[in-house]
Length: 457
Image (tube, rainbow, N blue to C red; front, side):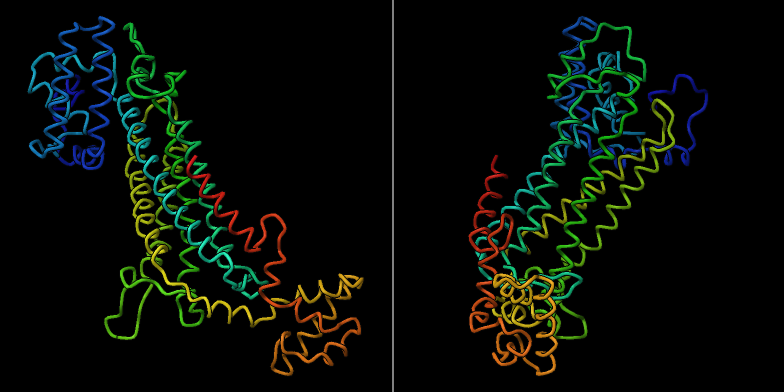
């Protein structure tokens, strides 16, 4: 049965019905559809639009359907057009004519809008929780490796010494911003479209503030046209999820490099690695690679939503049915990635000696060498040039700044003395970077503790 069949003399063809149907993917919103219907039926009874006993009968029937769906006693009829049709049809089958009163003063347009908002509100809260779990692991790892020296990179070239804890906290900051974006979006989307009806509200004396309170919304939407046609929250959530995937993908890329033999900074736990079907020595970071790959999928979902919405005149159009599969897929993908990535990071082994060894190469203390001269009154540009000449000399001699003889330093600039060796010590180079936000170990420890406090608020 179609809810709109009264106007038509012929039934839909099976091909048209299959193409038009959305129950294959909107059935996941059955809890939210029943929740919204219970609030609507309660309001109808309280306002006298239908009799109180009819309202109670409807609510009792809806609760029974929910219980049966959750227990597996009742299964979806995939021949129905959508989840709304299925539940209303099942309700009428169970309680008779009272079930036909449920749709009074309501359209599927505002019904589906409230279902999606309720569903995504819950999913956003779950993703917020998963992000907090990841941030907690990052901050805890940063505290553990607050003084572990490693090379920091620009252009994928060794640049300056930092600590592994400092590097991890950079990703922690990214995910804190993701958390903030989702929390802001959660506030903006928490406005109730129920009661907007098809597009122009209703002549019935409905109480939209009551349904808003029953459903946990902050307020009803101000404009009925906007109430049924707004999908900004889908676009915003998808955009936020895409940025999360950018961050997860960048982190995954580094994890993949770090566990290669060329770096060997970390080793992933066996539970989060795979092997090769032909090369017995291989231990592949497939989880990180999959996370990196799924970023493109989420980006595609976002672009699909933007494209579907960009040319739609007010108010509701069937194009908007395309919102669900895209946003559901984006949500599912991000949740799956966070659930897999967090324990992978938590269980990895950090090879501190390999990081320290890499930091010793690449002349990443060259800036500190130049700074040593500037603190003796040499203009920075002259100090920079002298240090560059020292690096070139080290390359010719096959050594590094720490082991370059003092006579070689003196050849380049007379201001050098034995104090330079202490100044370019990697641990001291890092420890002296005490500027706010810098990688000094005490900074890292405080930053990690502050990060943990932020996710507890």
